[in-house]
Length: 495
Image (cartoon, rainbow, N blue to C red; front, top):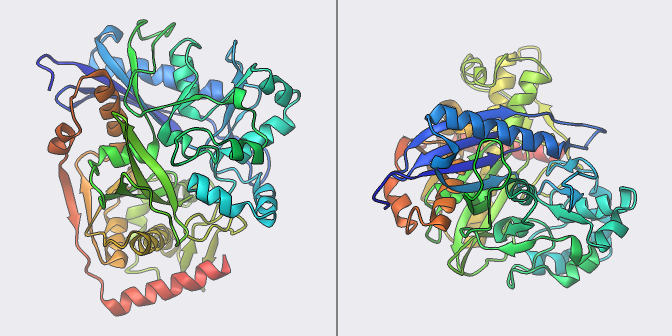
């Protein structure tokens, strides 16, 4: 531990907004800020972001977090980045001008292309090489679409004029004043373009998806100095940008899941369950993904992952689409207005179904409604539907890993909902543990940045600082649990 106080700034660039958190070298949060940005829906199933708006949100939240902490930019010793992962950007390498909006991970426009590749027999080689499945969720087919549909993009990419990146790459590029075009191995493992074992871009995957090598960033580790700041409004030049991981890998790190078998579930816009599997990748037979967790000091840790595309976004839909609630936090009180959801089931397939089903054509479903159904029943069914899809992921993870999940760590905004966390424990039949700090994604980014810059010397300092806030012990009878699981299975079949 550093002898004098140092400060690490973590940028958590998420799907609906940007969080910035500042930690001191004793792992205490001293400042934070948040800003939402626009969601763009050009067509049904299409979701886009404006890359320049994302960058504006980062600049604004960095300045606000510094003010909140009572610090100046020169007080920051390192920067860590975590990000929405598969969201795909393409911009001019020299000017930084985006050639098109970023295509968000939720976007389904390449569903037919993925189906075509499956018909051609590409699913097996893709899974063997990348650990992923052919689904429009991932970056590869999004980049292929951009290169094919943006005027002159393919020719310009082949000429080295354009740069592709997931959001981590975009942020380092902007933070460094256009000097660095890099990604970390965890984010690269989400593109359909990286060989999981060599941790380099795969020539076979590039050929399959028609992606020229010139457009791709350099793949680096998860805690090292990639570049230093240059030309920012609120930060001086020269601050090390020293840690990077996709949001779910960062949350796994922030939850101190450093040993094989340790697991966490993050409830954000979507919900993501990850299990650390150690230094050997585990091939899934149950519809999960094999991914890189992080690479530290040349040693790679892998993870099994299950992704549910819609979690907190379902609550946002109740708020913004159906206008059943005024703010997201209102849902728990509304759901507690009934003792249970009755016969109502909600399948949160508002952006298709992810693992372990992988049905991009699936759509959201309310079923079991009759004249006695109230908005309270709908609210409770939404919370239960999110938890039930997580149970599917946990069942698949137990099958693939051959391990039980003795303790289920949770984080993210929706993890603050006691009603849903108790229901989650009940259907899992496993204790659910919530940490004192739910913003473990930001914490993971800060830890990686601090490790990369030498603020902290080892992950064990982080493990020692991790503290539980509340434990949810299963209380539901087996008969009631079976009733919920049967109802859920029927709903998924109809979605």
